[in-house]
Length: 178
Image (cartoon, rainbow, N blue to C red; front, side):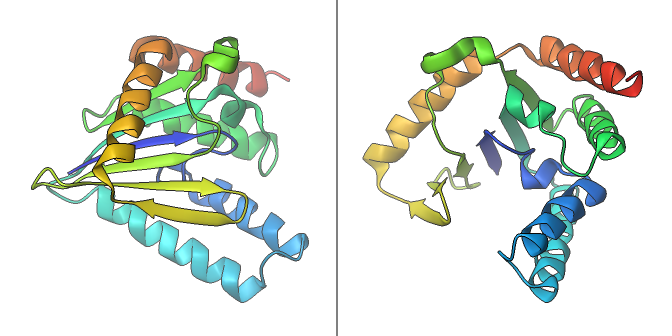
């Protein structure tokens, strides 16, 4: 099984630390977008999903994250530093490929919204996209093929795996020294 993720505003949920995820969910409660109970349920579900990706056999996860995900201070400076440290750690695991889509891509970034492409062990594919407040599942081969091509282009245009790790590390160090 393989997952290909693209996120533009926050670190993809499967790659979030518990404190980062909690801060994000608590903000939804403060804004009136969720109850405390809903936020706790969401956090529990997320942490359960994260545990599943570390089981054997583990899925291969390729995440391209927009540079903005690394600058948005969710939960404060300490949470952001912890989150960046975690991303750095994940970049050392063979099951994870994490790349940064730099701001310099500008209008050439192919996606305007988060997407997930899932390839099952039997090679069947499914896609999931999100727009403001709505998610949709895509099973039609034609749009999925288009999404996969766009994702491939994004991978090529994003920073390399090593350059992304260094980008994340430099950003973390600058936050640590502020």
